[in-house]
Image 1 (cartoon, rainbow, N blue to C red):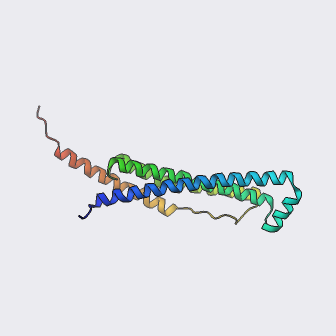
Image 2: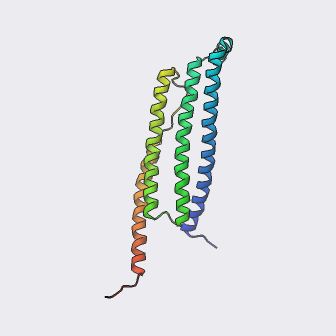
Image 3: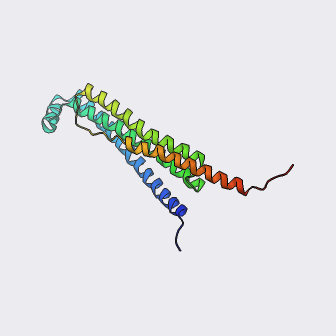
Length: 179
């Protein structure tokens, strides 16, 4: 039996919700790894001069640059975690309502679009500041999804229009009460 488009949307929404949860977990692991890495590097920098020299020779970077890179990685992972969480929340809400065409869903998707522009930009700005302070330029790349965010914002208006159409159908089905 052929599935309806709405059934396919629900399946995709469920799969994307799972992927978002996995991404959240991986980003959380990244955050923890970066914190541990920075902590170890700071500790080594304080405790052992010979270890610092060996690390700097092997890596061809200063300890400050390596610590700064860990901090930038932490902020970028935090950015990914926040976006993944917002995505997961949207997909859970969409599954509960059974359709992307609700006012709440459209608003949530619009917020997700705005967040997918703003959060990476803030993380990139923080990383630029950290990179300048710790002299670790070009050790980490930034993924700014401005185009994706704009498309999501535009799609949110399509979802809002769909919600208006759905409400119109529901109102057409309501019996008129004469007074």
